[in-house]
Amino acid sequence: MNPILYFDNAATSWPKPEEVPAAMTRYLCGIGGSPGRSGHRLSIEAGRIVLNAREALATIFGVEDPFRIVFTKNATEALNLSLRGLLKAGDHVLTSSVEHNSVMRPLRALEKEGVELSILSCSIRGELDPDAIRPAVRPNTKALVLTHAANVTGTILPIAEAGRIAHEYGIILIVDAAQTAGTLPIHVTEMGIDLLAFTGHKSLLGPPGTGGLYIRQGLEAKIPPLMAGGTGSRSEFEEQPDFLPDKYEAGTPNTVGLAGLGAGVAWILARGIGAVRAHEEALTGRFLNGLKDIAGVRLYGPADPARRTALVSFNIDGLMPSEVALELDERFGILSRPGLHCAPAAHRTIGTFPQGTVRFGFGFFNTEEEIDAALAAVRELACGR
Amino acid sequence: MNGGPWEVVLFQSVHHALRAEKLLKEAGIPCKLIPIPRNLSSDCGVCLRFDSPLRPRVEEALRGRAEIEKILPL
Image 1 (cartoon, rainbow over the protein chains, first blue to last red):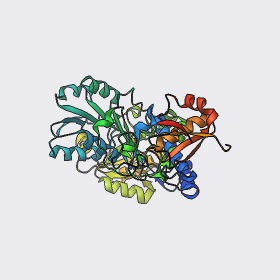
Image 2 (image 1 turned 90 degrees about the vertical axis):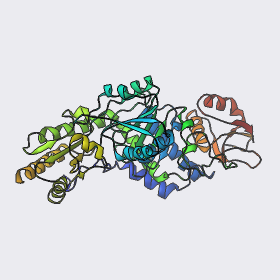
Image 3 (image 1 turned 180 degrees about the vertical axis):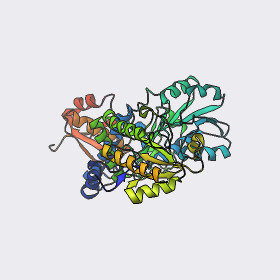
Image 4 (image 1 turned 135 degrees about the vertical axis):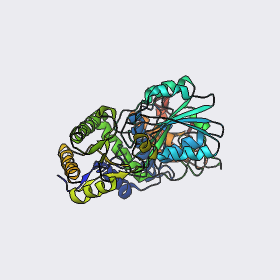
């Protein structure tokens, strides 16, 4: 067993498969090259790496044309691109009460600029009832923004159902897949997703500094890019190209990051997302099962591991989350995340605002042994309080 | 590839050029991405060069699967 038990995969996944740093080193040491800018062999090879990453992501999201996926530095940028691009003063937007601040902060800023915002209440376990959507729709409702899974409770939201309802009203469905890309199956057309924001450094197993946005055919006409600049195309012109992906990819991309992300996604595709999910779900179930028998532990989110991603928020009565996390780290080498997890709305929804919770996020490389060690540690802390 | 004669496929952006190269390679058609010659104008700085006699196979491999601007003799 490792001296460190890493249970913060919901913040960032670690370790990565060895193919990921290998691909990044191969790029930095063996290729270099500005992808596609120059015509020489190293530039071309760098361009191939970016294309391969794009195609791997198209496969994992069920996207037919890989150019519908544009790269950003993270999911937050993809969400800002979508929200700021689409929503104008006088528009109405719907969202859930368990969103991450990377959805809430742009929405609150837009609210100050004249966009109407309605928040659909979720249950104390973070669940969204799709029946709550229809009554909230107004004539000026432009978009429905939902997280695929809440980052505080792991609760999986009913995206496909929401997509069906949204399209009945001609509403654009924007999905924050930061917690689910790479671990839950996502098929953009089957689920009715118009814009999918994803990050590379969580369950897609890439490095930080990578992410992107899938844009449904036709929507790009409504979304101005956040930046304009060099694209290596239409170089005689001083206007930003209007075709994808160039429109949204001004400047040099994070090629070394995309080399890693491509390797991470390929690794998942080789094993099958089902196998990854099955392992993570089993670990989550084992942890939940053990926790519920410990007196003084308060659990949040759905009891059924199939209804959540591989993360668990809990508290120990009489102890602050920060105290628990520090003890776990110092005495047991267990790394977790205490606090509000950049999602004050979600904590308000589940009743843990302002103190927050301790959050464990499991990944493919965690083991049953590690789960059992974690349970023993939590038991000791709960009994000793 | 030998010394010609060649033709080149022109593209709107390098992303399209790279994808076309992949499609041709998958179809077993020898080709090479090269900097665009000065006498040809294009939106993108690279073009995909192939031996002229292979043109029908190139068109077939790319039809409906890659966006191209045009194909010109070099």
